[in-house]
Length: 68
Ligand SMILES: [Cu+2]
Image: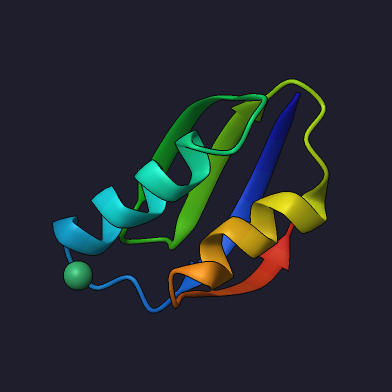
């Protein structure tokens, strides 16, 4: 499955790496693609809930403004 998160607060490659790592640590997440310019984070996963993905990002201090 694929979920697109819009993540606010990412400003540089360090933020990008942090968000990627946090999401990759969620059980069931297979792949994370971050596009800094659009704030889009594409998550490929095996049936992980939107809440879990949102929580992983918010736990490290970024905001999820939209989930598609
Ligand atoms: Cu940064």
